[in-house]
Amino acid sequence: SMVVIEEFLDGPEVSVFGVCDGADVVLLRPAPDFKRAYDGDRGPNTGGMGAYCPYPLASRDFEALPGAVFEPVLAELASRGARYAGVLYAGLILTADGPKVLEFNARFGDPETQAVLPRLRSDAYELLAAAARPDGGGLAGVELDFDDNWAVTLVLASAGYPAAPSTGDVICGLADAAREGVEVTHAGTARREDGAIVTAGGRVLNVTALGPTPAAARDAAYAAAAKIGFAGRQLRSDIALRAVGATRA
Ligand code: GLY
Image (cartoon, rainbow, N blue to C red; front, side, top):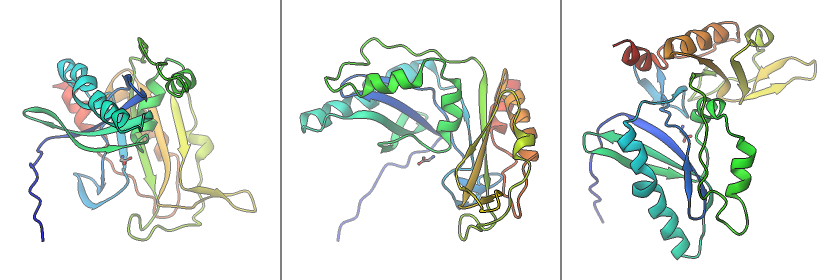
């Protein structure tokens, strides 16, 4: 048998998505997610109960990421004949020695994407089309424009999630939640034959709000989420609280 000893990475976890064209990478803004089911990062692990963007990563650390984290992966893949065009998701731990990679995924992250993309002012279609150009090279020199507003995303999960998610519970208040600066994204929902929208999975809805400060975005997201009801609805009450505290300090 073999024992694998790994370095213990201590620090906050942040997701950074790099859009790659095989050689070049353009980074979207960092966003942490909240993996545990209950407030205070307690309870079972989930797919993610909320996110916010941007995370105030030191600009020196952020600017080092393409060369230190993304480009070596792209170069190694290309050298193996597997040119990678698409989203490379780096899960980073921000240690006292700087960001360290915990994991890579070949996809966007959920629910971070719901907080990251509403702040992208550049055209997302053009960005992805440039990444997918068959001859490569579409992202050379591309710079992205981002909204100054903060984004906070809350996940509304079904009763019993994550162990045994309840399905078929009628969801009300969706129209009331819709307002300027708020996006409600459906994840685990279905339309019943009579037209009612019902729960159909563990993480049911995402409510994302934009605001000029973390507190404003957070308050707007919680106000919109409060309009939406279904039996046993689960919603953490401390999403982005650290961001509010950090900017007030
Ligand atoms: N937010 C975690 C993931 O998408 O894997």
